[in-house]
Image 1 (tube, rainbow, N blue to C red):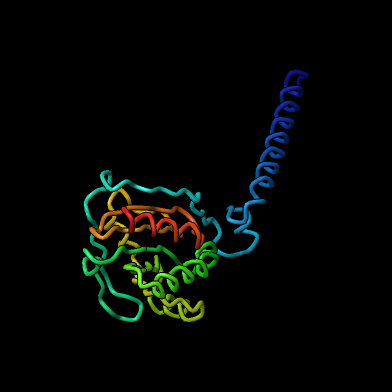
Image 2: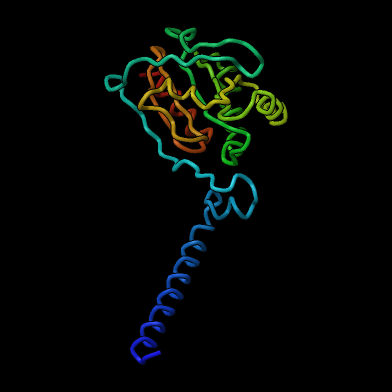
Length: 206
């Protein structure tokens, strides 16, 4: 090997080594996020899962798009349509899956708000969407987690198409429909009880 070739080979090895170190540092930085791909891989559950960014959006009444119609079969075998709530209740739609760690985390918050709005007799209906899993598995999960609000089964993952360009991209996601059936608020990622209650009150008042 010539001296020039030797120098090039040495430079190439050094560059590869530096790139490897940079990759490891980047992976280490991501591992502090419990929803990161690296952390999911360490846990061995749903590798590659990417959670929402937690963004919250409220849409003024005069900026809301056309009413949407969400309908399907619930996990307990009933047919349901969002049109049944038009003019009388707002609808809180929560996209979830038993395979989604942040979805499990937010269940107590959703349950608290659901219980509170019922006790206060507020015109609010909750409806979950069990995303991309069979109804039997979803029903078993609901029972284990003691979820008391109903959910639609959506093994095919197509129910979210009803939202058009406002469709959530991944669970967990929460959307609130006003009494006209229009999307009035959205949360991308897990939602807290305080945030959800505030959004519900705002939509009711709008």
